[in-house]
Length: 193
Image (cartoon, one colour):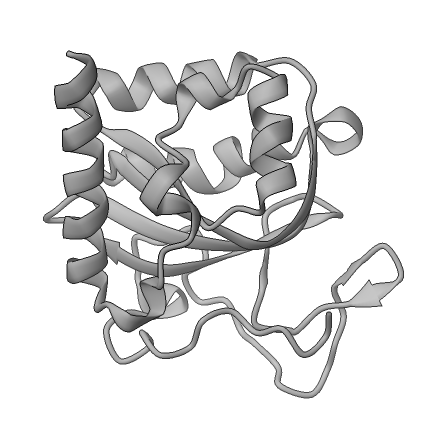
């Protein structure tokens, strides 16, 4: 796991540690000192600690005018033991929402497992973003993870599946990816509304 880096090619567009409005502003990174680990496995030092011992993140891009952010994850999303959704919501999502972010693209290719608890934080997050005409989209989460989300009845809070399950997102610029995801969201709302 130590050689899995967050996506690097958008750094010419955005760097969270340089963004005064980011929860990770002024964060210093090392390329040689591996200090964070998930269980017994060190992870690359570019990942950001969100207050969890099993789930780490990287804000890849944030656009305050368009009100969206793209966040990549690595590890195990474990609400049962570590209440990861609470840590994510309080330490990352709420600071971004205070800055006007209402649309969240969560990339989960490196989320290896999911363990659920209750849905309080998911419901709270969903209610807050939908009140502001926002949404939460899950992109490229592993099939068994999305199945676990559905079994826990958490899929109602996310836009997920279909085209979002296997999207080649790295070929897009951040604005292109946002437009693509927003089109998917609007299409689904149009189908159900």
